[in-house]
Each structure stands twice: as structure tokens, then as C-alpha cells.
Image (cartoon, rainbow, N blue to C red; front, side, top):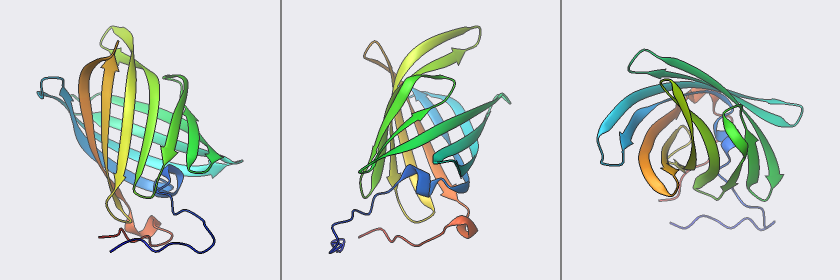
Length: 168
């Protein structure tokens, strides 16, 4: 079944700020470029608006017991596009949304034990339902694929503000 066309011409974007507003939990894995499991990850997120900027606080817990916190500041720029920054992001992330997915590209400072490297992320999130999304992020260095992160997002059902059914 096709998605109904809005007679006003407005688009129904799958927006990062709408989906991640409130509390969300994610879990997943990081695989190296050979498909070997390297890490299991869980993430607790809380998103809120402050003075026209969407603040997304993330707490990562790795299977090693290591914890990491990150705060993203997301600014919508119109027509399904946005920019985002966090302390580990080099410059700004550039994002765009359509009716079923979000894509964000950025350069990132990745900490690996005693050193830090800069990597390029191509981060894609796919809407599955009002409360579920799947994230695939590919990490590259000098154009060479280092690995992929797969995360599965679940919003708390009581945090969902409006229903947006996924077309079949």
C-alpha cells in the first residue's frame, strides 16, 4: 500500500529529533571489516529540546564493562536536513531524512586504548515502526572499511507522542 499524499505538500519525514525525543534504548554489535564480532554494545539515550536545539545524551556500555558518554547537539536546517555536533565529532555531522530513513555523515575521533584516530562514519537509521528502528553505521579510514556497527533502537511506548504507521 502506498503512503497517502498530503494535499498541502508537506512531507512526513522520519526525523531523528522526533524519533529520539524522550528515552530510547539501543543494543547491538560492532563487526570488523572481516565480519568478526569485536564488541557488544548497549546504549541508553535521552533526547530533549533546549532553545531550538535538540540535545541527545547517550550512555554507552560495552561488553568489556567500559562506559562512555556523549552529548549530541542537533540543529534542524529545514526540508528534512540537519547538522549535529558533539565533542568527538570533527566539524559538524550532516544529516538528511526521508519518509523511512535518516542518514548522517561525519568525521569522528575514535579512542582505541591508548590512542585516538579519526574515522569517517556513514550512519543510517531505518524506521521499522513507531517504537523500533535499525541502525547500520559503516566506519572508514582513508576510504578503507574498518567495520560496521549494527544497533537496534526501541523507544519506550509511553514516550511516543503520535502514531506514524509504516506503509507495507
